Amino acid sequence: MPRRGSPFFLLVQAKGTKKKDTPLTAPSKNAGSTLRCTGAQKIKINTSGASTRCTFVINYETLNKPLPLSPPMITFSQVTKRYRGGTEALKALSFTIETGELVVLTGPSGAGKTTLLKLIAAIERPTQGSVLVHGQNVGKLTRGAVPYLRRNIGMVFQEGRLLFDRNVFENVMLPLSIIGMPHREAAKRVRAALDKVELLPREKAMPITLSGGEQQRLAIARAIVNRPAILIADEPTGNLDADYATQLMNMFSAFNQVGVTIVIATHHPSMAQHIKSRELHLKAGVLQA
Image (tube, rainbow, N blue to C red; front, side, top):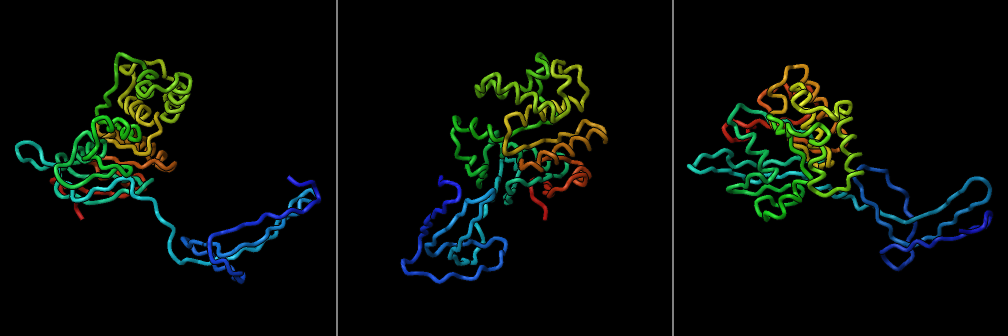
């Protein structure tokens, strides 16, 4: 760094033509425009006094094309899922879910909602078509690669699938123990997750002593403790009264606001009305317009 009061120069060289470029008038800052530097300029920075002044001129041009967007988090392309006996649970589904989007999957029982979620988590494989999750083709993953995919996916099931021989803290700790996270860091994450679902005061309680709504919140804490990019929930409000169901949906909305991509399956269309989301409706395995 130079002494106070002494000017210095920083030469900025950008890719472009070698000839001297004439400075251009700055274009309006249109959203999505890409700027490219077309020349070299000297930047003079005066560090005298208590403040720093920086005066510079740089040549650039507007390429007039949008910045590249991130690819969708989930892409289904002509996906069919057929079980033994010929039953088709899903039929030629094509859709995308963007990064950071909240999608509510609706439809009657037997419409294929659970099967769709299982395809996202690589619990099932498509019979035809392709399922891309976080850029990975689920149908082509080896068995050894599946656990690494699921580290980015939190799963909440209707029945909770809690371990009733372990307390609240130990239930949430389980995913972190499996991946070998150091205990001190894991404990911090567990308590942070429990705090988010308002169960921290009950970390030593056994699941059997919790209400139905509390058990579902415990399942959510376990699903988010590894800070997944995707959270999927299969009928998470199915066994809850209206008040608890609304609380859970608001909780999902809060997670989505910090960037988590969320897919919730429910046979209650009214649940989608409580939160800002996009609805996908399934009927007999077919995506409805």
